[in-house]
Length: 131
Image (cartoon, rainbow, N blue to C red; front, side, top):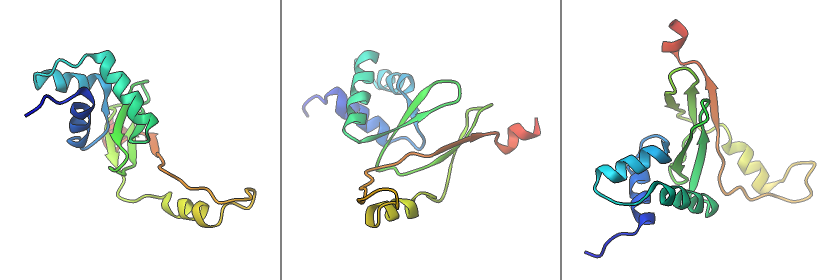
């Protein structure tokens, strides 16, 4: 079996995630699996995947950036106190996306093809509200 490059390793880790992951956590997982991909390389790979439209970028309230694959279409409620991310079971943007694709917006003279979108709402989860 030929050795896998850093890009494939990063994509494998991202595919295994149930929620967005930070570059540092991704790097740590690669190290735990015995790979020698450096942290700077992980950041470069993530930047490239984002440019290619393969990744969503999620900003956390404390400044950390996390990533998830675009094909893992998911939106989150993120608690600003405990940093827990709760997936939303619906996509409130789909109807708007369809409207843009087919009709455009009254102020725009043409339609708009949405390739992907991101939505993350920040607040306090029920556990942190009780504290």
